[in-house]
Length: 158
Image (cartoon, rainbow, N blue to C red; front, side, top):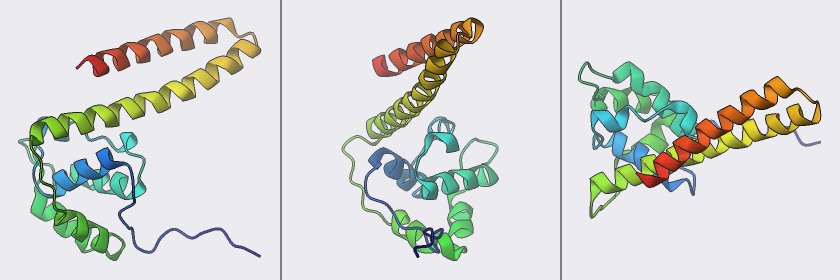
């Protein structure tokens, strides 16, 4: 009999999700500005390791909006669950032609994928409401979808 896979004892840096990984690397290397940090929201990340790291950011945010990177890294690496992955991300070689542009691109991709996931969820609820003939709910969900599509259009144009 196969038991369910257990939660990892230690996080590893996964393949893929380059925009999520790069933002976390830049965060841990102290290369993000306060306005970039403001866009790092846990729910926008899909990789559990990165979500956990973003969750720790608030604790180490200073009045300036910047993060005390040393204390963030110290906090994370003192936990054996994170130590190896975080240590790896802290020293990750990232040569960027244009760092500001790369960060904006990653943030745009992160936000776009997050909006897409929300849209898919709302669209599923809309289909159910239509099938069940709940017109008020249909109207509300259609308005929500239009607002999300508007946000996505603005994002893609930026």
